[in-house]
Image 1 (tube, rainbow, N blue to C red):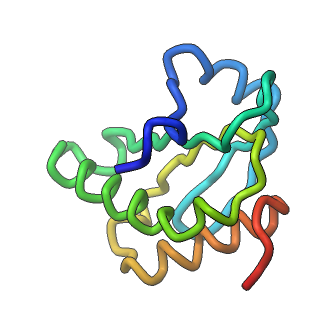
Image 2: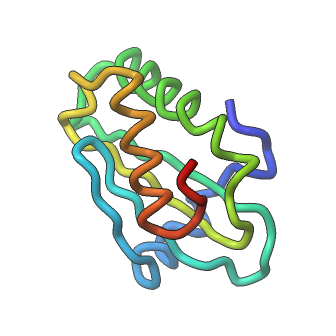
Length: 116
């Protein structure tokens, strides 16, 4: 689970992200990234729709895999961004290693973390 300071409340921020954000794509995820109005730690939200799977158990498992893959990058992120991660259907067949590499590609392409 993400620390509370890194969680993005979608209820209030989703429309702003979709209007002002820039999309970055990988094979399993799409990230919409926008600068924060008041600079703070980078925050994340993940959306897995029922198009991915009708079963909540499967969606929650995928969400946990993405969040666990994100943990090592939290300390290396530049502050001041909101990131909305949208899952693609191909995430169902993805391994944790593939998810980690997709996140690294997205964060590096968006210049949020240095490649290491």
